[in-house]
Length: 399
Image 1 (cartoon, one colour):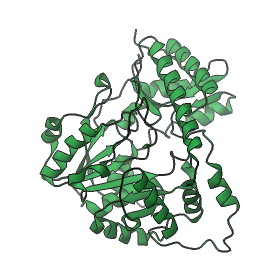
Image 2 (cartoon, helix red, strand yellow; image 1 turned 90 degrees about the horizontal axis):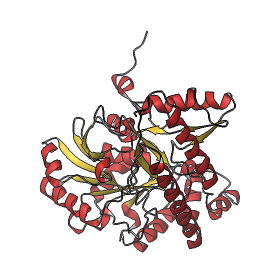
Image 3 (cartoon, helix red, strand yellow; image 1 turned 180 degrees about the vertical axis):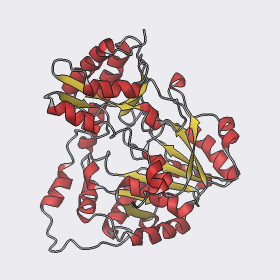
């Protein structure tokens, strides 16, 4: 019988999606499952995007340029310039989601066996993207005890080797919601300069910064303009997860031209997705004002509700729409599965993402979960009530 590849055996399951069969079984039993496991907003997609697809007059949905439609790239360059990132449309490659942007960045700049450092907990699929490229992820641990702040330069220096070729930063962070400050990014700049590395900056949650905090982009770091590769997506900004449109942006044209070779091999990004994404750039400001206020309300409600539960601790995230919280349970993976398989409260149960899957260091995150506050307040209220009841009933609760 033919054998599965080594990479196939090593590729991890998504901690966000691996419990889906248990959720489906719970629904088959008649339970309502509150999905707090995945960053799928229930915010409506901007009407301008829906109208652009509905009113599309194209007679043939043809291949686009491998870098994406020029009209979209030019308009996107204006968007970045408007937020203080001065670039030309030739610095932009449109990708099939942010996932492809990350994968192509790794393929174009890293060799098999190279290492990249990522503060953990981190978006779990980075492990998968790195594995596809034959690259090793070296985690540097941030702690819930200080709300997941960036580790010190000294901690980074301890794990840098001749194989270290880059650092990945997700800002605001998924899964923690931590917002890295200008000062923290300037510390990273020092390391990047000293070791002549790439800085891969995933900034897909840029618009979601709270409490008067402002986002500082890695593209604004003056001394490493040739080292920064910006990774972006429309999925969260415009609630368009399904259109699968992302972008890779760099002032380093050797990087852009190399990524283009890989982009040519996959031909082009999705046609209808580009139509929707380009139209989304005309989304009125009041849309974002409404979204911002909605997420502030959801965040405040969820975090306060969590911290009122005995033995639970959640930091107050400054960005994105996630929090990683500590639970009084023996094993968060078992608890998450138990809630779907065995528990219900008034016909409800809750699906969360066990945080162990967001750590590369074995054993960490064992009693933590990521919660995405992407549901309307009424649903979040019921979800928190259900989670509190589950914690009381769970056989593996830590007293």
